[in-house]
Length: 442
Image 1 (spheres, rainbow, N blue to C red):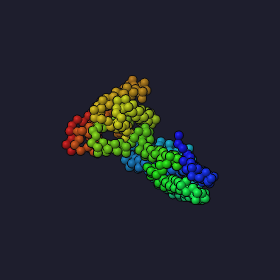
Image 2: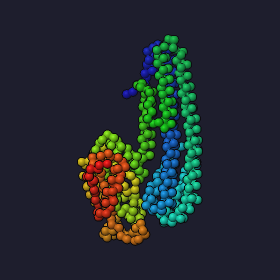
Image 3: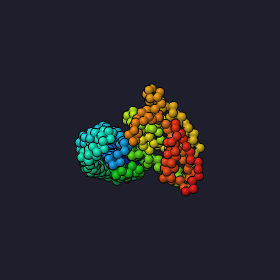
Image 4: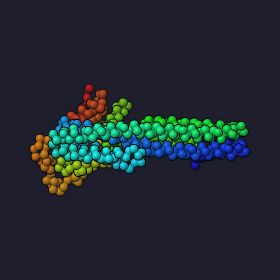
């Protein structure tokens, strides 16, 4: 059990006659420190959380803007599958905003986001109907101005929030300095007769408060890996541990929200690329499995967004289950986006995992169809050219690239290799995998 009487015991051992003064100094310091800790926890849980929400809303809006522009220019209905997760992600962020304890000046943000969502849904409906001219008009006259205004409001909110946070940090600093001065004043009364105890109290409080102030400023600036230089086995050490724990949780939360796929919560492109770069740099052999669903667009058009989303989630869970049962500890399951996934594993396990994934997928595909469509063995839909025809049931293609077969492996080379194999696999019937066993002389 951690001791909280270290400072008090030193004062008591110095001179019993001055124990009253020593206890007053320590007691005041602990009360102030407890209040400092409570206010700091409020900052971490509320103020810093607000920064994360503002950033998430901005990134989501910019992502929607990018996809919206691509849809207006390219007029490719396939891009709708990328827009829908963005809208769903904004809905989740809005829910977080409503349930989080945020400052009063955030009260107008939910209404502004909801107003934008209403217009964005209407635009999405027009996109879904492939009325591209009408969609371009709505985007130019409605959603784009609303989004620009919302981004401006977010920027204003961030400035206002930063000002408020600076004010809170200043008050916290003043409070800490006041606590330090009062504790020092009480301690000076007994310093002539209890110098060792007084020096210990002063140095401990001063160092700890300064370290906590420094850590608070660094966390406020976004540096969640800050180190708190408090090693004492007392209340200050406990507070330092709590601070470090909160900082780690904030960093983990930020990293997950930045990269995780909003639908499947699997690691996204940043994590996948980082893993590839690390393995390439450390010359660790690996198998790169690029997994793609065949006829997924026809399936989504036929059954709707919800069933398409369920199919995406089903495949994500399936991959995790297979890799957990038959993969290794360092294997990675990632979600590039849409119906594209990546598995990184040991070269000796690549083919085994591909077979297991396909076998499990083919056994679960019937769950995704009605009895009528399953019996027929196909669904009827419209292809990219607007021609009505039948589409086979969902199948899976897996392109496997072995790093050992590449002279100078790189992310670009692996991507190009997968694209070539994917083109070949798409011409085959049923679910298939293909391993490129050729030695590349690049």
